[in-house]
Length: 161
Image (cartoon, rainbow, N blue to C red):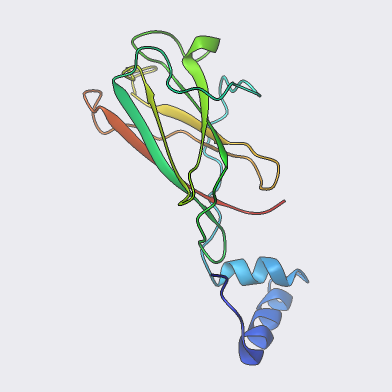
C-alpha cells in the first residue's frame, strides 16, 4: 500500500526537494522510502533486447531467483519482464541460446532454471535486466560466492518512467 504523506510530511518533502535543487516532489518522496536499484557496471554486457520468455534456459540445474518492487513504497510488481543470461556449462553469455526471460508473479517474485553458471573473467556471475515499459530499465551483474553454488538471487527496486 502506498505511503501517504500527511501535511507535515509533504512540507518536509517539499523543503528537502528545494534543498536538493529539485522541484520534483516525487523524487524527494522516493528519498524518504525505498530507493531504486542502480544499474551495475557491466550488467548490460551482451544484453539481447527482446529475448523470449521461456520455461527454462537449456538443460537447467541452476536457479536464478529474485524479487521486483516499486521504489518508494516497496510494493511488489507483478508481470515485470526479467531477462537472464550468463556464461554457463552450455554456452557463453553472448550466445542467444544462453538468454531467456521470465515474468514476476503476483508477489513480485521471479525464478528461472538455467544451466550451471561457470566463471568468466575469473568470476562466476549472472546478468539480469528488468526491461519493461513502465519502469526504468535496470541491469544487474551479481557475483556468486562460489562457482559451486546452484542458485543466485537478484532483487530489483524500480522507478517509474
